[in-house]
Length: 311
Image 1 (cartoon, helix red, strand yellow):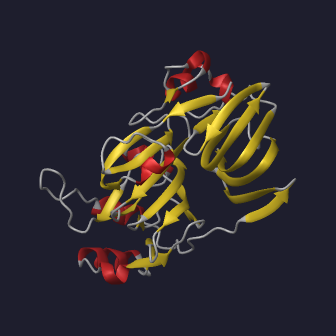
Image 2 (cartoon, rainbow, N blue to C red):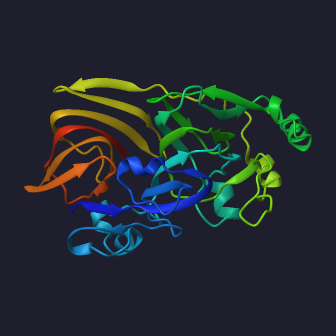
Image 3 (tube, rainbow, N blue to C red):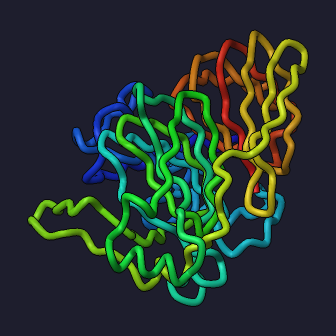
């Protein structure tokens, strides 16, 4: 039982209009996020097909756990987003599970980014120059951000692993697909003194940030592994306790062997069809769906690039 999902859009102060390239009808010209595969309470997807049509993903997760191999997680563990950073995001950090569950009542937030597009000269902030917690606190208190934050140039096709505790920010002119733990907890360190719609400075979370920042996190890229399988290129970007994220570049036909009992699929380029247990579905750039435990015989046909993730 494949689950096709209706995206949820989030307007952001830094958002733009680039999500329209996926065929989406976005709510405004400051649309920052497409929550593409989400069971989070702040933006659960609605199922678009089959016997669960009209239900939310969190409903199906709670009531039909067998579709997910009887996963014992309390909540659907992952969240897939597409982010349009028309302007730069705040410099921020996310807590790990222990801190977040104790202080926020939800998972921590380890995430990763696949750069879909980036304007010339685009960059992210990743990591800090402070060598100790004391130096970190001093630099934050003195707002010595020019020296604190590390800047990293990016281009289309780059991949970055962002574990909890990593100081980071997406720069302007970048479009990314983000795979993350299902969490909406963010601690802002610096926001360029921007004002919200009511003219107020957005809240910062300096106390929490100082507590959760991991000063040892320095490496922005993982070591990817690429191979060719029957003319299709397969790349595994990361695989750890939180998630595995892969990209398939499909040329004509792929007999897909699921790497996990359920998989999250995002079509980021091209189009074609997917045949699941003899049922045929058209798919195209901008589609997102979950292959469940009932989906056993799977065949992709067409020319497309696909991001695949699973817990």
